[in-house]
Length: 96
Image (cartoon, rainbow, N blue to C red; front, side):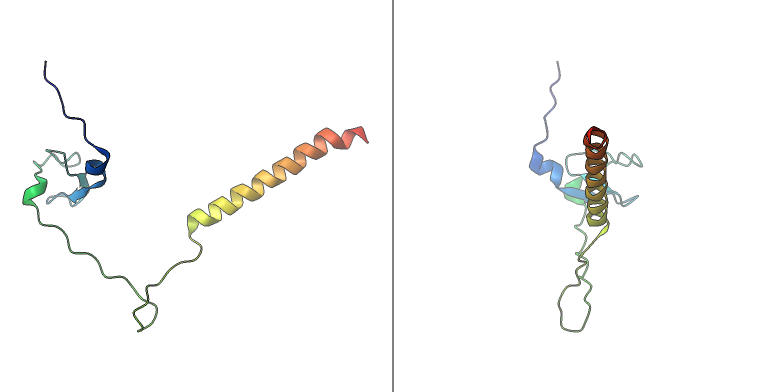
């Protein structure tokens, strides 16, 4: 019976890139799951980090205050509040 090593959480978080299709791959994979090319994480060079874009010439990183996930959360919260008020009116409004 052949046993397989279970990857640890730390090894799952380390991502490498395929030399052929340049998609992200886990470091413990032997082949690219997208293009099928043999993959050896130790032989591939690490990509250089992309520079951070800045607003001005002062070197401060540009940050977005409200991204898409924030607005989805606000919308879901507002919808939940509306549904709670609607349910309260339906339940207690007819008893008056």
